[in-house]
Image 1 (cartoon, rainbow, N blue to C red):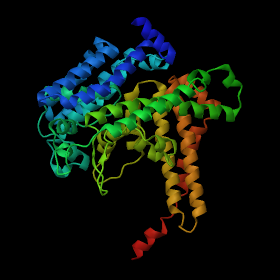
Image 2 (image 1 turned 90 degrees about the vertical axis):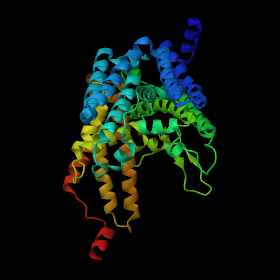
Image 3 (image 1 turned 120 degrees about the vertical axis):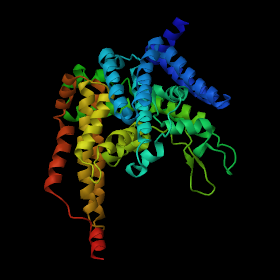
Image 4 (image 1 turned 180 degrees about the vertical axis):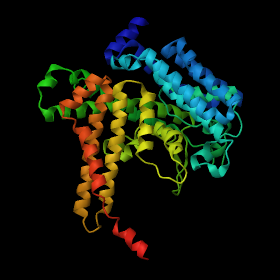
Length: 465
C-alpha cells in the first residue's frame, strides 16, 4: 500500500502526505452526501463530528484533532462562562492559539516544499469558532443595535456541545472552507428556514450543481498541472531570472501568480461540491419563473470574476468569498463607529487580520498591506471614472481599461510575497521590477488627494431639484 501511494504521488508530482490529504479531501463528497440519510438530529450532529474528526485523523494524524479541540473548547467555555465577553474573548484566544501553531510549525516552509499539516484546517476552524461565539454574544444585544448580518446570524440560545462540534467539523469544511454560520448549520440540520419543506415540492436536487463544481475542479487541476512546470517559485529564484530584462521578469511574476491561483481554484471547487451535495450549499430560489435553486452558499471563488476584475475593489467579493464575508462581518464592520464612514484604517486592520490569520511570515504581511494599498488606489480610479460626463464614453472606457490593467499588475506583483514568504526574497523580487506594484497605488492615492474630481452632473441635477 505504501509503495502504491509513493508511485501515485510521484506520478502527479506531490508528496505522499499531500496525496493522502487530497484523497481524504475528495472523500468528503460521499461522506457529505451520506449525511442526508442519517436518522435523528442527534445522529446527524454525531455523524458530522465523528466523520470530520476521522478524516482529519487520516489526513494529518491524531494530533490534528487535539489541536482542533483546543480552540473549540476555549470558544465553548467562553460562551458558557463569560457570555457578555465571549465574542472578543474567543477572538483573542482563538487567534492566539492559531498564531502559536503558526510559529511552532512554520507551515509556510512545508507548504512551499510541497508538504502539508493541520494548520490550514485549524485556520478555517478558528473562524467558525469565533463567528459562533460572536453570534451568541450578539444574542444579548438589542435588535436596533445590530447590523443586518448580526440580526440574521445571532444566536439567542447556547448550542449543545454536540451541535457545536458537528458545526465545526461537518462536511469536512474545516479542511479548506467554506466558512458558514452556526445558525445556518442548525437550520439545515433541523430542516428549518430555507431548508423547510415548501409548496415548491421536495428539496431541490444537488446533483447538477455538484457535477458542475467537479467539472470545474477537473479543469482547474489540469491547467495547474500544465502550467506549474513552466511557472513556479523555483523559477523566481533561478539564475536565469536574474539575467532577464524588466518586462520578462514582470511577465514571469504575472504568470507565476496566475498559475498558483489554479491550485486554490481546484481546492475550493472540491469543497464546494462536498457542501452542495450535502444540501447545506442551498441558498434559496431565484426570482425567475419558473424559480430555480441557488447553490452559492458554498461558493468560495468566482474564477472569471478574479481573472477579469475591472477593479481591485471587486477582488474580495470574488476571491475566498466566504472568508472575505467573515472578515467584513466580524472585523471591518465592527471597527466602524456608529454614524461614521469606514476609512483606510478599517481596511488596513482587516487586511492585517487576514495576514496574521494566514501566518506570521513577512510575505503574508506585505501581501495584505499591498492589498490595502491596491484597493485604495482602485477607489481613486473609480472616483475619477464616475466623475467623467456621460458624453465622454471614450475617456470613461479608457479609465475602465486602466483600472483593469492596474488590478492585474498589482495583484500578480503582490502575490509574489504570498508565494515566497521571506522578507529577503519578497523585497528582492519586488526590487527586480523596480517596486512598480508598490509605487503605482501610492502614486494613485497621492494623486487622489490632490485631484479631487467634481461630483457627477447627475448628482448636481438632483440637488437642484
